[in-house]
Length: 256
Image (tube, rainbow, N blue to C red):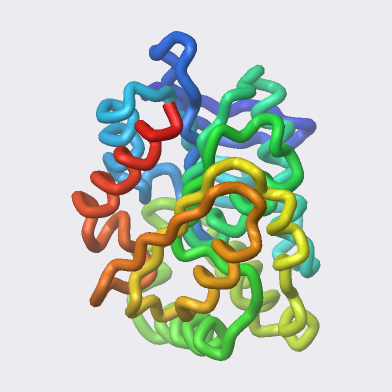
C-alpha cells in the first residue's frame, strides 16, 4: 500500500489506503497509545486479502509519520476527540461502509466512533480496549513508564515515531496516571452501538481485566461476542496473529 500525508482540517496525517475491492467495506485500523501504521506489520494486508475488503491504516496526529501534536497535554475526552478526527478523515476520503479494528486506545476510539456515527459502521472489532480505569491499567502504565526511563525503549520507539517519542509517551502516561482521569468511564455510550461487535482480549492482559469485555458486550444494543485467548497479554494480534486472524476473518465474513 502506498503511503501519503493527507490534510484533515489542518491536521496532517499519514495514511495507507488500499481501495481495490469494489463495493466492499473498508477495514479501518486504529493503533494503540504508542502504536503506528508500521507497528501493525503485515496484519492489515493479510486481513484485507483473506476477507477481500479494503483497508485504511493511519497514524493519529503525533504518531508515526503524521505531523507532531501541538501539545502533550490531554483532557479526559481525548479519545472522543480522536473519534471525531476519524470521522473527518473518512469524510475526506468519502468512505461510508466501515469495519473498525481498534487495539487498546484504538479499541476505545472504535467503540466511541461506533456509538457516535452508527450510520457508517458495518461492524466493530475491539481488541483490548478500555471503557473505565482499573488499578491493573494504572500499574501497567507505571511499568511502561519505568521501562521508558530505564531501558532502550526510547530508541526502539524512535524507529517508528522519530523525534516525537517523548511527546507521545508524556501524552499517554500523564493523562492515565492523573487523578482527574480515575473517574473516566464511557459505559454510557455503549447502548448507542448497534452494529455487531467482536471484543478480543488475552486473559493475561497486563492493562485490563476481563471485566472490560463483560461490561462492554452486555451493554451494547447490537449483537456482541467475546473472544478470550488464554495465556495471552495485551497484544493478541502480535502474540498469536494466526489465531486472531482466523477469528476476525470468520467474524467479518459473517457480516458480509
